[in-house]
Length: 139
Image (cartoon, rainbow, N blue to C red; front, side):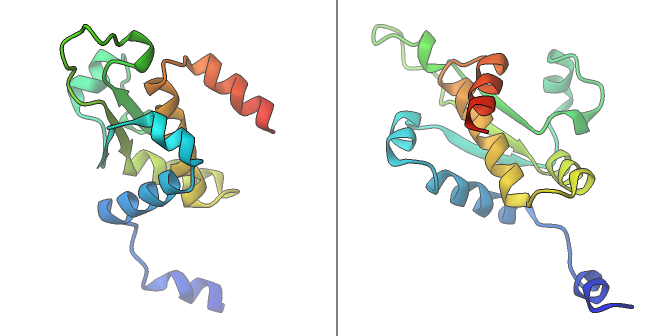
């Protein structure tokens, strides 16, 4: 066996805590103004979305959902509204690992950062199409 094969022989998959650290690093790498506008969003790392969430979204395969924004986006908030529940961004470890494994052309940190930024876009009130257009403009 080659050294590259042996390098993986005693490795385990990144844990939920490892993912949390990678997500925190990705968030810290964002421009300060962007982070400031994000406000008090909670980040949660889970293996998969729960069955109720998958059902509400019409998703049968839990590997299809890598992340989710849950809350009232900033474009829908008003100072006269009662204080909303905290906004949360969920990153789902197993689907992200699956995508990373299948793609093989980007690092795990890059995929985590992509999912995180996508969900922050929803926090700002952007649609999937809006986010895709922004990403396309950055390439």
